Image (cartoon, rainbow, N blue to C red; front, side, top):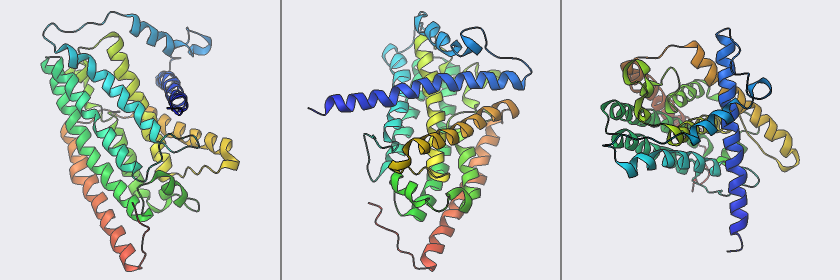
Length: 324
């Protein structure tokens, strides 16, 4: 019982910076898209428009919450809340000096929690009692599950090389060399798969405006829509932070703690900015192209790379440490 205030404060220390980061990445996205389209972007609310995202969030939360008359009320409002809660829970697992959780199977826990988001997506589409939102929800579930298989296979290769599911151990393994150097094709497939996993352009087919208006969240407005929005961008930052940990090295020795935190933040910001850059540069794929890319290109390659790693380790008689 005495540890409850400690865990509560540490949880707040994780959630508040995450929500602030979401506000600023939305602002950066609007600025990047603006300059790429030869315009300024938001610039009226606060100096250089830095308060624009906060103003938009306040506007959404004070708007009236509407829903279709035939919608399932409980599930309709539970789905966006569940989506945001799952996105914030993932941040608690990230290793840091004040981490609340440090378990040996942290990668499995991340995959398990992130896969639960399909229930909120499908639930929001079904609860809206709208054909467009239901089709968007089904698309989202099919896309998420498909690319989770590819991501899981890539992580298996990393697990084979490191001999552990623990993120801290994966970080320590890269003290001398980053995995992006030895697994460059795999890191490329991982990055493109994370684009699809987070429903970002050119894989944002769950929100295809030309066909589905806005996908699974078409019937949402005000606060519930803002929860979906917050969760989506929190997932973008999280998946890029995970990419840094797995492929770009994120060692955190205590004596260099502030410097390493800044370096990790810079790496994560660069990867997140590339997400935004891709949105301004590439057109949306067709749905059959999206599935073809995963099932007939990325998944076979990642399985082949996994088999190569297994054969390589067995051939040179390396005994990995106990993964449990």
